[in-house]
Length: 293
Picture 1 (cartoon, rainbow, N blue to C red):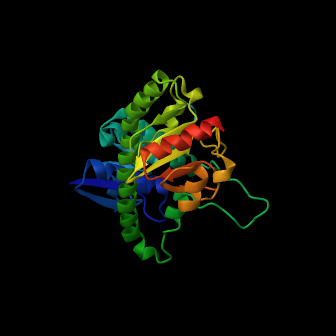
Picture 2: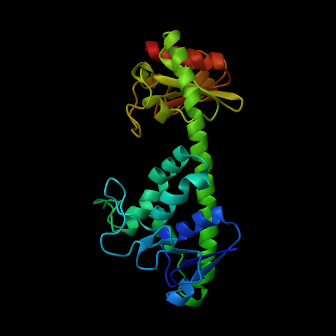
Picture 3: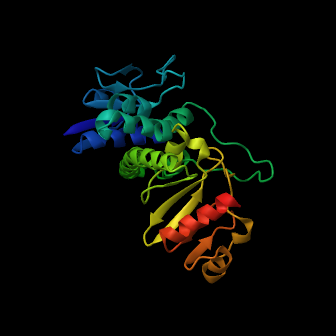
């Protein structure tokens, strides 16, 4: 049984996720929330309190002048410290731990250290995006006697998020091989599209691959249907290297089949970035026609 110590009172995402991460290493644990150094002395790990940072002593605080930072200068919070030491062990792979750090952990570090990650919308002054950090802070109860119980519930929720993020990161990494194979086949056959496995996370891997510039579309199965997706003009962009024909926009079933001259059309999104049919042959025809258009 390990004892995790952190501060009492209001909780934030960094201490919630730090305890959640430690609980994945030590499933048998107790949480002691206190500001009493006598209580801290009984803990196996201390996070977000203590006044200093010392890995050998298992003390992971960041609330002091010139606290710990990443190589790029971003200040760490308690979850950043915990993840830097235990992330690879938790994930079983340094690549997965690094992806979780970049896509999840560092946002907690930034927000907890006063970095603003959202922007004011002038046209809608009352609209604010609620971050994951913000949603956790919102869970602090008005009845302070219930805070410890709510904190433990948030730790369980955070652990589930970490477990899900790890599984998704593993799948993303595993997708790399499928994209590389698909791109090699496309180059060998001198075509402007790739065919990837179902649920393959292909976009980011494609952009990170040499020779991706000639690829306009990706084809992939989903259940009994076959989809074609345009390649974005850049990662995260809504514009595409080449849209599907405008005559297909918003059509479905028979109307789509008739215009596209296929027997089993399912739909083409009005945004002209994705369409589907009932067969690989028909989807390949759609892509071939779109390339010529």
